[in-house]
Image 1 (cartoon, each protein chain N blue to C red):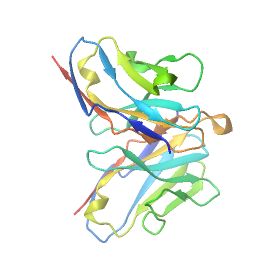
Image 2 (cartoon, chains in turn cyan, red; image 1 turned 180 degrees about the vertical axis):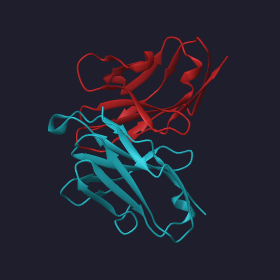
Image 3 (cartoon, chains in turn green, blue; image 1 turned 90 degrees about the vertical axis):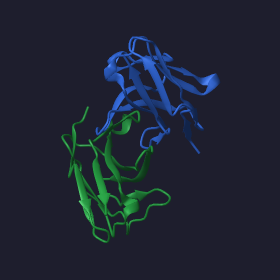
Image 4 (spheres, helix red, strand yellow; image 1 turned 135 degrees about the vertical axis):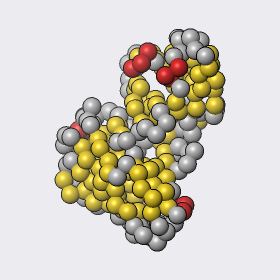
Length: 117
Length: 112
């Protein structure tokens, strides 16, 4: 399976600022996903990021708040903009392996633990 | 819309005892089903997956799960739990190219 790294692993930020999270994969993948895991909660998809197209956002998430870049097949960034304490969460990127014949299994990075004060 | 229900928020088992974590799903087509484990401060690790074929699937760390279409269930089992299995377990449903929808998770505690 792909090896996924995220930077930073954790950060403490002031409200009103922005943080960009990086996700790096050791192989080329078409589909990348960004999830949020709020404290004590399950994972919720923020957006799907495919190389060569605009990210697709889930209901409740907007591009102005969570802009995503996907410049190539091994890298993506998620920015959390104008942060508030409610943005305190773990942010995880994942990739789906298998190309067009894939079966939906996703592999996750270690996550970025964000605390907003 | 697809959904996943994990009815047990917490489960405590004794080390060496058997384990079953419940998962029920709702999905409009043939589901792809997954179990992930998240240890404290860690990311998610894929334990096992079901796509088609044999309804009993084997995973890593001695886990297995059985797909029962008639019950819309995909319960995770392990015959003998080790202290290192203490973690949070997530059931998820999805498909190729689509998002995964996760259950709320079950926190497993192992007592010695």
